[in-house]
Amino acid sequence: MDRRSKKTDKYALEFSKRLKQVMQERGLRQIDLLKLIEPYCRKYEVNISKSHISQYLSGRIYPSLFNFSILCLSLSVPMEWLCAVEDIDESEKKKEAREYKSLENRVSEIELTLARLINEKKKEAT
Image 1 (cartoon, helix red, strand yellow):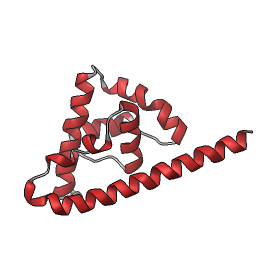
Image 2 (cartoon, rainbow, N blue to C red; image 1 turned 90 degrees about the vertical axis):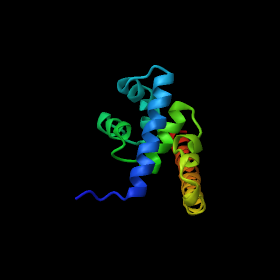
Image 3 (cartoon, helix red, strand yellow; image 1 turned 180 degrees about the vertical axis):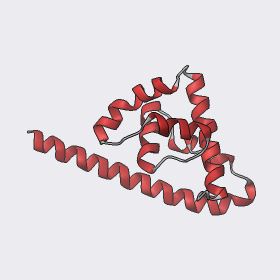
């Protein structure tokens, strides 16, 4: 049985549309995207496989926060745009705005954690 909710499906599909759009605009294939994200994946020790990319593009799954952050960084696109929050129906916007704020807070926490880890690794290297 599929464990995704309809809301997750909607987010995954909207994310898929945006990811396809940016890839098409830049003439990127899946393999090109994998090469583009590789330095970030190595730097932050995150694994994004071709299978992940295929599932994101098909709208089957939504990326984890780490993977989402890596995609935004490597594509140089705003998180708000790639997650397609503004495309959600008007009737759901208030509820979605609260959930989005929570997501923003989590992303901020991840960014702070990543920065701290980078600083720690730099200190270890010296």
